[in-house]
Length: 178
Image 1 (cartoon, rainbow, N blue to C red):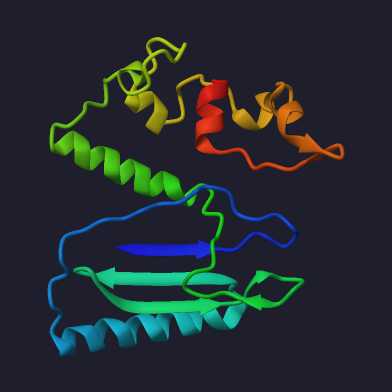
Image 2: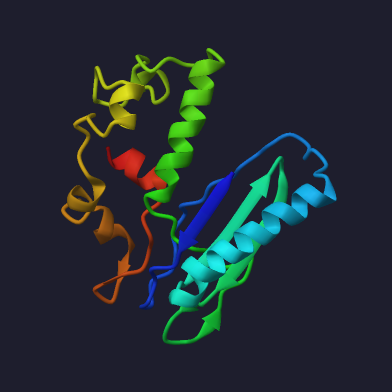
């Protein structure tokens, strides 16, 4: 597994509820030589191609459930110079699409769902008939982009203070507004 996330927050914004929880079976024990091999190659690669080139973010690479490379470089907030750690929340943005796609295709392989399943199978009452899992994965669903319709809704009126926005939009907010 490879996960690399970059911090794009250089202002006062904080990451929202975009989290990914990965689960896996009990890690297989890596042979110490194999561990050293991957660790050394990855360290050399990232030092030469990323770390020494101004990278700001974190990298974690695992093999058979064993972490073989882990590095936190830079700041959560570039102005405050607060260092990134293993528990710094980062906005993963579109990186989640890869994990979602992999998880969906694994569930298709395991016959837990079909790419032709309707979205309403999983979200009863959603007013978008005919939208399938495949359409969602390929960004061809026709669902409105929440970035455009939420500011025009009454949603912000119910959670703003001092003419400012005091609440981050959650996945459930978007689903309810759809």
